[in-house]
Image (cartoon, rainbow, N blue to C red):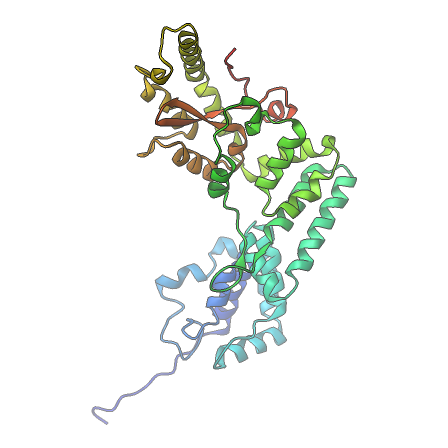
Length: 365
């Protein structure tokens, strides 16, 4: 009949549903996984969204991804008869979705494999086993330490710490995440006028404690390793630094690059201190004529790029974001009454420096 609207029923093939869910599980992606069950999910037949449209192409696997063992395992799981029935029930249900515990567990384990710790943390939390999983990973770390497998121990400890949850987060609890760029500012909040008080120059026991407290999410996590012998803590910290910052060599190269400028700066500061001591320069004019621009380049070269802001904290924040452990090996240095920079500073007698391939630094005698 003319003018009559003919409605067509949307059908989402089971194969497409399986592929989309298997991809989210294999990727360890809790965000995409939960999205697939929302009221406007393209997998729902009562949704106007089309899973095969280009904007949702990221939800489906590529041919290469389909060949991976993780994907094949996930696909086998979602294709199971009882799982399929549960998924169909949830996709047709109105109201909150009850996610399959089998699928969540597989997703969480894959998220750990991919080092997507916030995703793993959320999935384990939904299963109410997150704290238990933390303890299992810490226990695994302990066993690996006893066997002398430092690298495996570091990996287990790092996973356990990364599964921490922040129950004070607003408006709802969320996975705790490292905030090295903020923690670095707290670490260097006080200007150290005595070299031995700089983090990199602290006695080995104090340095290790500061380092682990900074690199782990909570002091309680750090205390699990700081109660071990120094001979264990040192190689543990070296491996932890390499694990957290795979581009550590890049930072070491930057430190090498700034050494000539550091030498010039120290010579100039020493000369000015001597002139003040013998009365040739007034103390309140100690920085008069000092080429601060020349030495701001130390912060720039250490970071590997120039910022619009010249403030020490701006460079430290960016440096800690790109190379989190670097905050343990730098200090604030005044080069003018109103100008500070970030400069490498550490004690080369500390065996960690050599194991991290950090170069010997110039000093003021």
